[in-house]
Image (cartoon, rainbow, N blue to C red; front, side, top):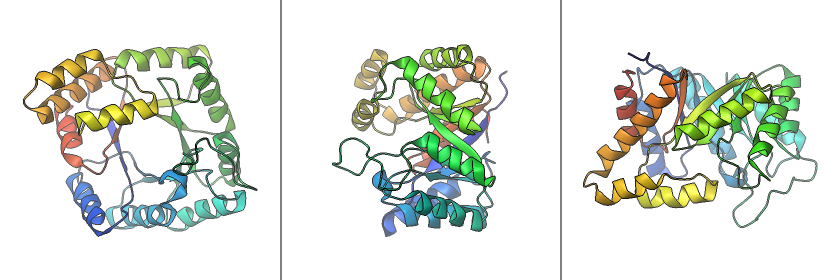
Length: 277
């Protein structure tokens, strides 16, 4: 039997009172599951900067979890960005997920702020120089929408590790072979840092189609037929996600990072199927 994986979860900060309840309910649902770390996202364009800080502090102090706070290059000078990192450190956070970040809604392509970091490699380099953080970064098994080709993502990831990244969390994907091919390309490029697969249980079939399209993530044709003919999308989502994870574990993967969307039910069921109780 395959050994139960190490797990981690991603949450997003609440934007209103109702969302606060959703976050707390999600966090409570995962109590006792001993995640390696949990991450808290930034909104597009840095729109949830203060809320992210508050959520990070809460999860670290009240729940005792190892928190990796997202930090982006968007809409801030280098000094402002590093001041945010320092504020994380002051509340006991020792890990950062360093990202370029998405541009503000409607802005089109990313444009560096005046006096800001131009890309994630610059941010990683600056964070590494502080010596304060374990640095996690993003990776893309399926080509990033802005990538010239599939090798561009590998080349860029290598630069991130050379700048000081400790591990990489991948964008979500649905076909394990895509991850394995990406891992092989990374091996050939001399990348030795840890690659942690990002897993997204399908909470809504129509919604995930739009979301995946915006991220450049292909959905297997078999999924469309399965959801079309299934009368229980909830159980189908659990089964598909469990199968994906089992294939990854069978090929030597030991860590899985779940994008929870602040909805615990599917992720918790998948984890139980994998032996994480």
